[in-house]
Length: 156
Image 1 (tube, rainbow, N blue to C red):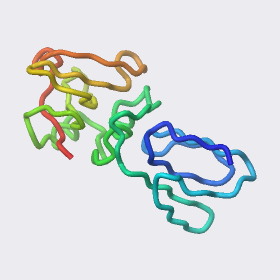
Image 2 (image 1 turned 90 degrees about the vertical axis):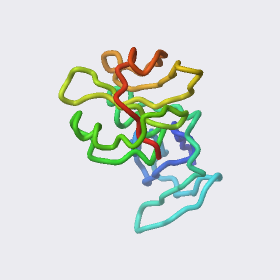
Image 3 (image 1 turned 30 degrees about the vertical axis):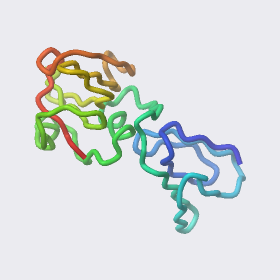
Image 4 (image 1 turned 120 degrees about the vertical axis):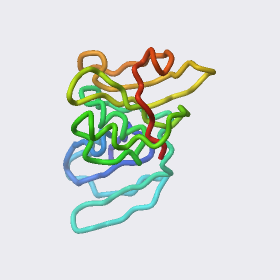
C-alpha cells in the first residue's frame, strides 16, 4: 500500500482515495487494503481507518497553504474548530506569552483575522510558520509581538 502523511504521524485514511484531514494530505493507491500507521494505533469503522500517531507535529510539513487555520491546525492539532472570523480567533486566546507549539492570533486588518504556528522564541523575537501569508502561500516570518501584530496566543 502506498500512502503518505504530510503532517507528522497523524493521518485519516480512506480506501481508494486521496483527501485532506485537518490540513494533512494523504494519498492511497486504489484497491489497497487499509493499514495502520506504524507510529500509532488504528481504529477501524466500516470502510475507514483512523491512524493516530504520537501527536508531535513540531516538524510537520503541512500543505494547507491557502488557509491559515488548516495550516495551524496541522501543526497544532489541539487548535479549536469554528475559527471563521477574527472575533472567533480572538476568543481562543488564553495567554499573552509566546512559546513554541502555540498558535499566534494576528490582526491582519481583515474580518477573518489570521493565525500562525509559533516555531520558536528567542528573547523578544517570535518565529512563526503560516499558511495563506502572503497571498495563499506558506511562509515563515520573525519579529516582535507588536511588529507581527500578534494579539495573543492559543496555548494547547
